[in-house]
Length: 334
Ligand SMILES: NC(=O)c1ccc[n+]([C@@H]2O[C@H](COP(=O)([O-])OP(=O)(O)OC[C@H]3O[C@@H](n4cnc5c(N)ncnc54)[C@H](OP(=O)(O)O)[C@@H]3O)[C@@H](O)[C@H]2O)c1
Image (tube, rainbow, N blue to C red; front, side):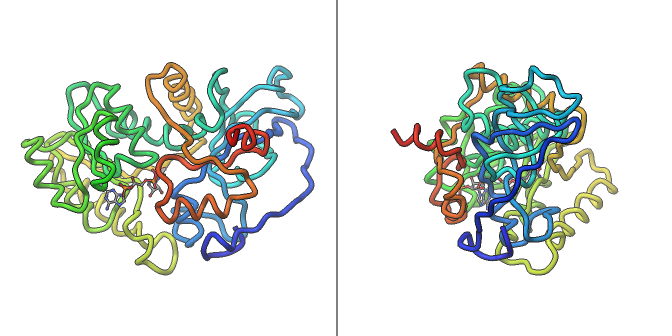
């Protein structure tokens, strides 16, 4: 990703693969996720993005090919998953062995990668931020999206009732996931009040903007607003990427400084907390056990990264877009 622009600015480069340093592994990437984050990065609008140029790619699943000194020999040949934030759109990547999580045998690498960032984000927001309990009611914005579909499934699994906003054409899909759909183009607070008159126990909001106030107001006492994005400001804001997030941080601080029985928190997925790998392993085992589903519905070879990103940015893709290694791409085309 050399500079700000449209998907057509993406370039392919070749470079020498370094030998692994002590504690590192070299991974042959089998599948790498394409996410809304990269759409935002390309516009220079992603939360904490690096300076251009950089290799994008938030998460990957692949096979360990080589190891550095001090790494368990048994890791060679195993399938692992990792959250990289950037760098996963490559044939090979060098990672710290401490940053990778085993992928259960039998999981398709492209389906598994659909649950890495999105699955951990959804899991941690539900269980570490909002601490959702059985019998509670939660509102998931964007319930048809990558994070949203996993939030709905994991909340249902935790025993919660779910209301999910989505565009009308995706309501059947959201209903099939187990949520009550609400059209985000209509008056969401009124509709939510009809369904849950006392308000909801948690709201998960990736939209930001003026609607964030509605999200907070829909909470009942004891409820938690988890804000985790600013999708509504993608096209309207200019300047530093932090700008659209400042009003969100200011609101969160103000709400928490004036206690009224509800709270708000900004969530951002990170790979360094000690519980990240634990949470990713939990999500992958739920996927393996068939308790949740995540599907790579659009698979493209790495060389078509620009096309894949364009497909996601234009809203043509429904479901998760994944870049796959050449062999994988040939198999899925058969
Ligand atoms: N903070 C973190 O750690 C973290 C981690 C992962 C992702 N994120 C953020 O989460 C967001 C979603 O990512 P994703 O990969 O799940 O994206 P995605 O798959 O493109 O899904 C976005 C969803 O938002 C819905 N949507 C669009 N406008 C909306 C509105 N006004 N109100 C409610 N929903 C609306 C879309 O619904 P329709 O398709 O029905 O129009 C779509 O289902 C992004 O902003 C991303 O940056 C944050």
